[in-house]
Amino acid sequence: MTFTPLMRAAKHGDVIEVRRLLESGADPNAGSGFESALAIAAARGNTSIVSLLLEGGANADWHAVQVAAFGNHAKTVRLLLAAGVDPNGPRRETPLLNILHYSGFGREQQARVRELLREAGARELPDWYLRWRWSIRYGWRWRLRRFLLSLGWQPKSRRRSK
Image (cartoon, rainbow, N blue to C red):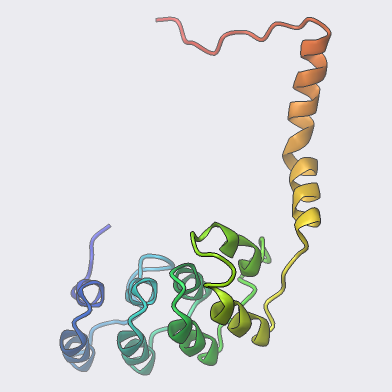
């Protein structure tokens, strides 16, 4: 991936350079998803650059909200949600409130981010449902393997012969 000058300035937190590039006509939407200046600034929690990019015409997307929430940047999450981003994501995948468990922050530390997402209408599935959904999707393979092993089945080696 090649970084545009705007992405590079957002990565380094250079507000003056971001402003100059936007005024000179740089495209704030260059890249997509996690590869955009907005997502880079959101991941770093740089609200001043995020607001400059939004004012400059950047399209706020769910990926920017996700990386800001994973970084526990409440002000950035608030700014992106105010720009009209759907907190549930584009494909109705596992809700953001559920996957925040894997961000490395405790629930107490994430209290403000979780509160902002709930106020914006984010959904959260119960843990038992996620475990059940996982076992339906993947667990049958393990149960079948255990059953076959109990019958004496010996799996073939996955090593490739040369």
